[in-house]
Structure formats: C-alpha cells, structure tokens
Amino acid sequence: QVQLRESGPGLVKPSGTVSLTCVVSGDSVSSNKWWSWVRQPPGKEPEWIGEIFHSGRTNYNPSLKSRVALSMDKSSNQFSLNLTSVTAADTAVYYCVRGPVPFDSWGQGTLVTVSS
Amino acid sequence: SSELTQPPSVSVSPGQTATITCSAAALPKQYAYWYQQKPGQAPILVMSKDTERPSGISERFSGSASGTTVTLTISGAQAEDEAVYYCQSAASISGSVIFGAGTRLTIL
Image 1 (cartoon, rainbow over the protein chains, first blue to last red):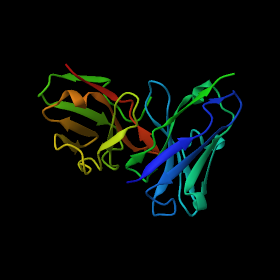
Image 2 (cartoon, rainbow over the protein chains, first blue to last red):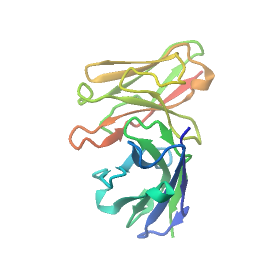
Image 3 (cartoon, rainbow over the protein chains, first blue to last red):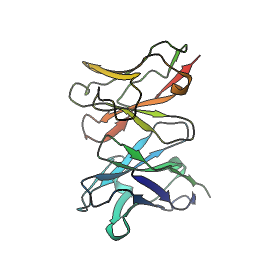
Image 4 (cartoon, chains in turn orange, yellow):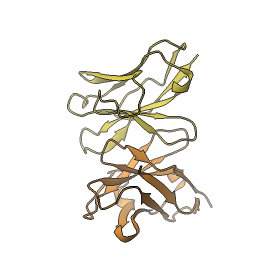
C-alpha cells in the first residue's frame, strides 16, 4: 500500500518560498506514475499545482507556472515543490499525490500559512 | 469560477438516493472523476472515468454521463456518506487538471 508524507515549514513570510518534500513508501518514484502536488485553501476546492515524471518531465498549472518548480530525488524516493513569491493567497493545505489522473493516493496534507 | 459546475449542496434523508451533478462543455470529450472529502481528511477517489468504481468503494456509489453532465449517485445514502464531493476533469484549453467547487452532501 502506497503512502505519501509531506514535510516542510508550516509558516512562510510573504514574498518567500514554500518548499515542501514528499516521501513515498510502498511505490517507487521511478515507476510508471506521475507525482503531483495539489493544494486546498481553507474552505475551498483543491487546486492542482503540477506533476513530475521520473524522466524529469514536468507539467504545471498555467496559473502557477511562473512560480513553481518540481524536482525529484530518486535515491531517496521523494519529490519536492518550490513555490516562490508567495502571498496570503497561497495559504493552503498542500497535498502530495500519486497520479496521473485519477489521483488514487494522497498524503495527509500539510498546512502552509503565509504570514509575517 | 470553476469550469466544472456543481450544486453547492444536496440534502437527503437516510436511505434515500442522492444525486450530485457536474456540468461542463468539455465533458463529452473528457472523463470526469469524483472525490469524497470529510473534514480534516484528504480526498478519496470514489468514481473514475465517469462510471468506474474503484476497488473498496461501496456499491452504493455509481456514476453516469450524458452530454455535458456527469452524475454521481449514492443509493441508500447513509450518515457516513456525509461529506463534500468534488468532480475533477481537464481544462478545455490547457488540458490542466481542474476541480469543481464541490457539493456538500448532508444526510438529514
């Protein structure tokens, strides 16, 4: 059974960078899957951020593309998210997810608050 | 506003049938997926490719599609089905993953 676990700072200052890591167990990030990040602002619907394949290929949400970078560390079986120039609108629970669609496995989520 | 249109809320009594719709112009050409989310939990996939129920999901859940609308049906709704349900598909222009605004199902 695949498990995903997010980790990273829970508080980020405005104009800073959200940096999160997802450790995968029960599957390999080198498998024939895409690995995504999805975020959910409080009380709102989920928003897909982007996905990465083990080849290094990435796809991003056009609305976030200019601020997002995904990367992968195959030796540690993990993948990461960097979201730059954050504002209060980036406050959300961030989930790492196994794909491609449909998203059949989700991490527990980690709340990231953007505040000074 | 989302490209996927869902009713904000649906209410049924226990044992009744709940129907939740999701509409979008692109749906005849794109599959839709449904997720159930309970408070404080991550979403769970309950329907795939319009009509395919994932392993482990109750047979009370079924899906259908007609034209620009897909429907999630919960037969004999139970208290444990109370949750927010999100449909998910692909954006018509970019092909990016998108979610509907969600429908809160209340079991009266």
